[in-house]
Image (cartoon, rainbow, N blue to C red; front, side, top):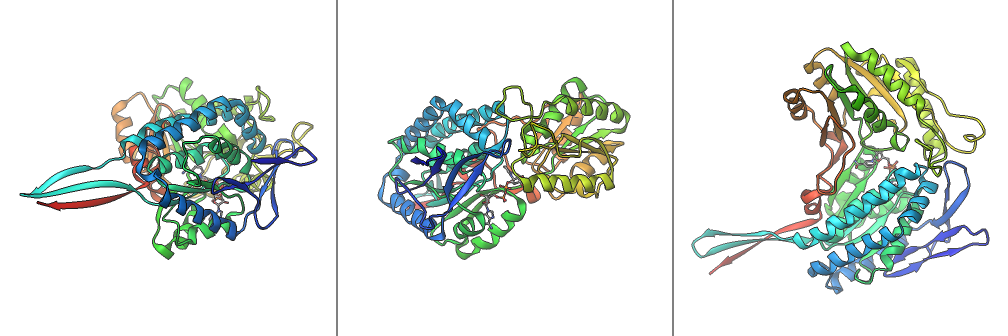
Length: 487
Ligand code: NAD
């Protein structure tokens, strides 16, 4: 539970063993509103000892409760949480906007997506079963799916509710015990969801914990821990690589959802009235701080000028402002350091190509206390430019041009990432060929950013390992055992 200080700013505690507890460090993380700079909450700056206590308590709950053997209980728990989140949707959306900065409309969408994910995996909890087969006369194989054990979930700050729930729901549905470490910039929304978990009696006591604090110490301790059987990590590719190194101690299972540099490929016959607003939205939603951001647009040379001029008009018409206002289309970025990083990339882009619009921090009365950046488009870029190759994680769109299908495929596949892509054309044969050739976990044809809990999501190349969502996403959290019976 939270306690309230004299300043009426909540202080969030860790939830371990079914109890709300303070960290042994007595230190706190501060959350500030990235639109206004105001303090909105404090959370525990936990220590390695706190994480170890959480791991032990989840392990005990997993061993001692019927959680791993009782799919109906898991179904009821996840559905119970979905209902609690529905009752609190507006409150959660407001906390999310105040802590993370995204617009209130995006926050409602994120919470609604989390609820949908919980409902899907609540049902899926009752489908975790294997198969049986006759292998020889009098010999039968029974393939069973079992929970892995104790799962550590390490989440990022950009979609902190959905990306935590996207892993928590299948991990629990499969019967595991879970410890969550949310990003240090967004503990409040994560603990608010745990307050609702604590109010659902069907969760086995202690089966799920949250410990807030810095990734470099407590996230790394989770990566190293021999008592954690699996780490599910969503975040930056470089952090993902360090998790791979840390996890060698007990060859723990890993699921990694990492960065992206996703292209929208626009052919001459595309319906631009539909394509341009969706491509614009794909990069400017959440101020570009989204793994599947359409951060590159590859345009056929014959329509390049028209597409760029329409995208420029789209970017310049966006109403950038405090996300809590219903009229804002794009909020601030999360922090001063993110703002500095985006500014640096724009300076690089200014040298590598031509800034068509934006490229600067927004200033003035409404903007000065927050971290607002202008929607930016950079043109005339070669394939090896840094702003084409590197994930900026801000509202910056890189434009590239192609002359034929082969060149479009080469450009689309020409980065280390492979998370998602969009293909825009009226020719379905070409669309299907492109979707086969593009090395990405999701290819949207004539749309973008459509995600469903039942459809798998994940990365090729350095965008990740394994899949989240869907049947494969559930199976990531299961062990497979062959039981052999000879009569
Ligand atoms: P990040 O890697 O900095 O942090 C992610 C989490 O890891 C945080 O909880 C952080 O505290 C923790 N962490 C940091 N260092 C750690 C360490 N050494 N050991 C263990 N844990 C550590 O990422 P971020 O800045 O929070 O998120 C942005 C990144 O996440 C972008 O690259 C984005 O593309 C990626 N992302 C990917 C997906 C996806 O589904 N593929 C979704 C959202 C975000």
